[in-house]
Image 1 (tube, rainbow, N blue to C red):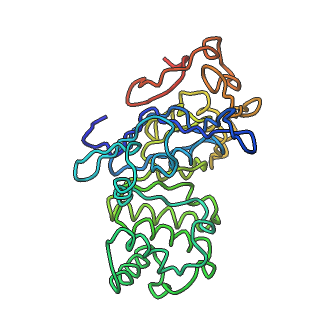
Image 2: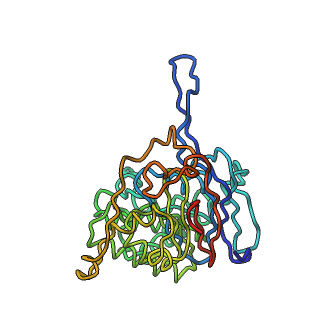
Image 3: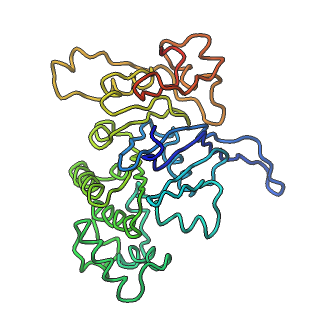
Length: 332
């Protein structure tokens, strides 16, 4: 990929959560390998979709990129609009706090991500005050501008989160993420907790804001139809690793990894003639535990075409042509 257009570069990122035993003398007896070696780039101005079933490590990947969880190993390179590249996992304290202005997150649950004891004005204005961007009456003016941008009444600054609907709360979360004028926003399943009728409104808002402020998104979701709508490229994740990454149309028209094929076969097609001819791929067994993941390819225990090499050797993450990345021994 062209280095000049790469905003974020993730290299072999891992996040393992320790499992401890004991009451007084705590000792580590294992670890949950939530993210276990992911590598990908996010291009400036694009929306990269990250999909996979619940518990595969999507949200942990997003939080580890932003250093909300400190990485176990690996590197995250962020290249700002000024051309300055920083390795995020090496930053601490004040240096990391300064980078927070360039990277923000929209959380999944609009009911849990807003402090119920703070007014909307305080919630959105807090990052402005913490980072010294605005002071006094200037904070209130900026908050009102942000409320207008996300489609809310600017006079709502003195109201509390419980006075808003789920969709309105998520708009408040979007306004808070925009407060510091970031370059990169991780959208962690921002619509999964909302009514279907509201989901499209929030997605359209995100698209409008991306165009208006030249934003770059990592859009985490398990709704494959919505990911196809909003993303320019899509990465498929399974049990802590990314198994396929390519353009949106290439993935939906020509999925190469067996897990991607099974995932996409579950997406309903509105044409009844096409739907009737489609073959649904039903995976056998359950997802293995991230505490003790399978050797070799993570997917081999459920893969319908697995061979002996799949059990023994971890597949190489490679470009099979046309910037179509896949981790599978059986894809040529």
